[in-house]
Each structure stands twice: as C-alpha cells, then as structure tokens.
Amino acid sequence: MNILYYDCFAGVSGDMNLAAMIDLGVEPDYLRCELSRLGLDHEFELVIAKDSRHGIHGTRVDVVLKNGGDEHLHDGHIHGDTPHAGYHHGHDDHGRHHGDASHECGHAHGHAHDHGQTHGPHRNLAKIEAIIQGSSLGPAVKETSLAIFRRVAEAEAKVHGKAVEEVHFHEVGATDSIVDIVGAAICFHRLGVDAVWASPVELGGGFVHCAHGTIPVPAPATVEILHGVPTTRGAVLQETTTPTGAAVLAALVDRFTDSPRMVADRTAYGIGHRHSDIPNVLRVHLARVEDGPEAWIRRDASLLQCNIDDMTAEMLGVVIEDLMAAGAMDVHFTPIQMKKNRPATCLSLLCTKKDEARFTDLIFSQTTTLGIKSFPVGKSVLEIAFEKIETPLGPVTFKHALRNGKVVRSKPELEDCRRLSVLHGIPLIEVCARIAQGRAEHR
Image 1 (tube, rainbow, N blue to C red):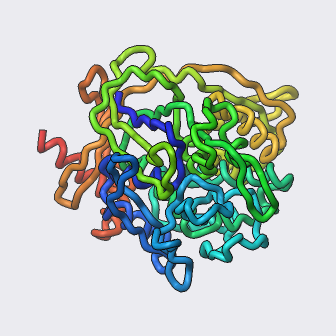
Image 2: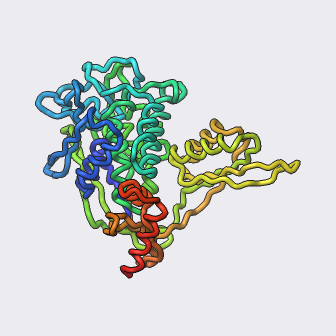
Image 3: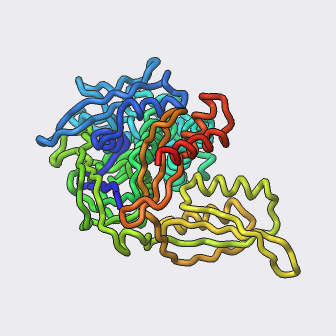
C-alpha cells in the first residue's frame, strides 16, 4: 500500500502543504492548470521558488494577489502562509499575515485587519461552494475541496456562536485561501495514494494580538478542527498550525501515528515564510506499507444509519450530495418497508470515527429523522495504483486495483473519458468502448 505521511514537527499551513506537494513531485504546471478551472486567474498568481530553513532545502509557495491586492511584501520578504492566524506580529516574524484560510483570530467579515491588508474578495461559504461546484474540476477534487472548506467554516461558526450560513469569513473567502485549499485537494488526488497518515501535530504556543485583543495559541478555530487528533504544543512561542493546515489534515488523514512502520521512497519539504527557533518546514514522505491487516483495514470507521419516510426523492438527492461534499467516505440509500406498511428510505453513511459526531449533527440538521444508529466497522480495501496511458483519442488515466502486487482489474477515469468526449465531439459511451477495445488489442 502506498501512503502519504505528514511529519508535522513544525506544524502545517496551507502554503506549506502546497509547497511540500510540489517538492514531492506534483507538477507546478499541472497544479496551475487545474487551479485555472476555478476561473480566478485574474485574481492571483502562484509563485514557486526554492528556499531553506536551518540548512533544510525545499520548495516555497506564494499566492500573489493581482489587481491591487496585497503583493504579500513585508520588509523585503514575500509574505507567505506562515503558520499564523492573521494576527499582528512584529516585523521580525517575516510572515504572510493573510495567506491562509487561517488568519484566524476568528474574526468574521467586517473586522479590519491590523495592517489594512487586503485578502481578495470577502466570500462566504455559499459563494465558495458555488465557485467550486461551477468549475470544471473533477468531482473528487470538488468533494475534497468542499470537505476541507466546511471544516474551517464550521469551526469559525462555532467560535462565533453563529450558524455557518450567517458567518461571512474574509479569511475563508480570501482568494489565497481558496488556492491553498483547492490546491491541497488537487495535489492529493494527483498523488493517487492509497492512504494518508500523519504524526501528532505541533500547534505552537504563546499569545498573539488581533482585532479582538490578545488570544492564546493555538487559535480557537484550530482547536475546534483538531478535536480527536493527537497534537503537541510549545515547541515555539508562535502559531505553527493554521486552521487551513489543520483542516487539510482533518479531512485527508486516515491515521495519526508517531511510529509508522513504512518504507519511505521519497521525502520532500515545504518551506514556510517564518524564521524561528525550529525549522519552519513541513516534511512529507511517499512511502510503502507492508501488506497485512493494518494495511487493509480502516479501524476507525463508523456506519451511521437512519430511516426516513417523509422526505421527497428530490430532497433526499440534495442530502446525499451535501453529505458527500462534507467529506463522507460513502453515502447510499436503501428502500425499506416500515411499520404500517409505509415505504421508506434507509440512509447509510460511512465516515471516520473522529467524524461521527459531525456527521450525526449534519444528518439531524438536513433530514427529518428522529434517531440515528451508529456501528463501529472495519473497511478492507484493495491497493490502488494510477497509470497514464496514451490512446488513439488522447491520454487517459487508468485506475488499477491490485492484489498481492498484481493488477486484478482496471478502468479509465471517468473525467478523462468525459474530457475526450467533449474534445472529439463523440458520445461518452463510444469513447469508453474505443478505449476498452484499444486496451484489449494492446494486450
């Protein structure tokens, strides 16, 4: 099984994650091309450079805003998404005080930033969802992006004591935050790993000043997002993990462990923008895990079920879309017959154990059910590998299912087939048939 392992000894932030993924092998041109599908190229430029901290060399990423936005410059330094929360630090911090969905302090739309810096349009969650859903990004990337955004939005809403729909986050809605989060989803799916593991997450410590006064590190939203996740604190008296970085981990990581049994094949470093007593870097590994029970079973899964007999099919269709967008591992409906011979629908949702409370609340809020059953389950999966293959119609990515290292079945990715259908003006079913025929002849 191939895994991505986050070694968060110095925390994690949105731009450090993007930098680490590029350093690991995600092609910058591919990332830029996919981000262009959002239709926001007029708002930002992705600047990628080499940098180092404490002698450790890696990649640094800056999201530079266009059209009068803050160029992220500060005392000759480009402001990057250092682990910080949009607080007012001293000039020696050399941090981008606005480059992460994190600039927490949890202030909602309408609060002035300490330095008067701009973050791009102040979009709320609904507007962000519209941008992502209306883009030409693949369905998997859309779902992952929305799941990460919802983590941040729900945490901010809880901190402010408001419903998610009532909170307008200039942090969440900032252009650079959208780039960090959607970029994280693009890179995750580009790597095509079978699972994501991470070490305990260093959060930093101390206090920072923001529009609301002095507040502690970690920021309130970061604490909310990382409930149920192992963390450490106090390595430095600064913020080391931002809400965006925390949300990326919370949405993607399957297992947290500080003693992984793995064989690392590649190591990369995402360089942050702050100079501190510890290296401001995010270390990541592409690694292999020996086949065995630990490699095949997801032990923290939960199955949530409820019966619904008073919602229309149209309403249930929206529910399943919203639950998948929120990061559910799987959602499906089963027709059932209830007491008094009433036809009804059984909703089944699979999620990680740490997400059980969040999805229970979502089901209660989005359906008419009065009770939800919960079952601990183990999920066994085959190893998955991806391969890009040239066909007469163009390049297509194939997903291979492997058992004991051997391919047992393969299929072309639907989004690639759909792209070729549009490109050549032929029906999708014909594209799939031609690709299948070409594969059979090749064998």
